[in-house]
Length: 207
Image 1: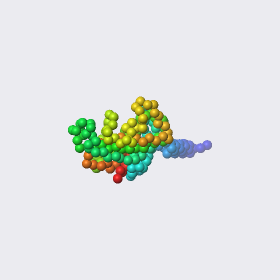
Image 2: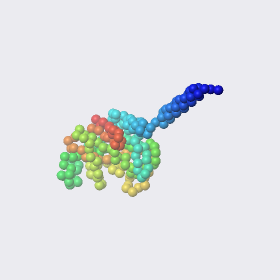
Image 3: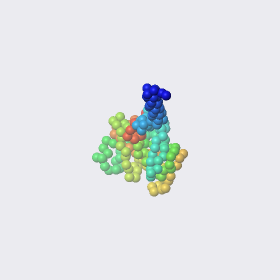
Image 4: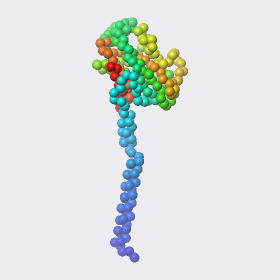
């Protein structure tokens, strides 16, 4: 028959063993299932991993584009920038509004590489912009087209006619083009693509 001291020591041993097992279990769970904050931090770091120096003609990392409640992945490649002249804006007959400005045309190849098929026109150019020495340009919303618009520049993001039921599927590439306004005495130095609020924009050097 064991004495009271032996029984007390046995109970303490079992208690410490249970504590040790509990601690090991918690560590194992933590290792296999990191916290939401840690996961979010990892996702943000992964999303921000992108080439820091791109030159025009080089493709972007994959970017998500949504349209009509569908989401697809695209790769964007700015191919060229056509610099206009201040007098290109004279036909708009708003000299005060466009004083000191000129229009530039940015060409981008957009390739659908994954996800849902999207109806045209998905907003593939909505996050594209340009930068000059003095800062970002301004998206130029045109009703129709200027007479100086380059013949190979599509203002409809690849759609031949408004109202068509064109669908952009995986593997397809479209060449799109949009106008921007910049100071008349400056040249475009970079084409940019915004990756959202929390990540640095992608930037392609034009020079």
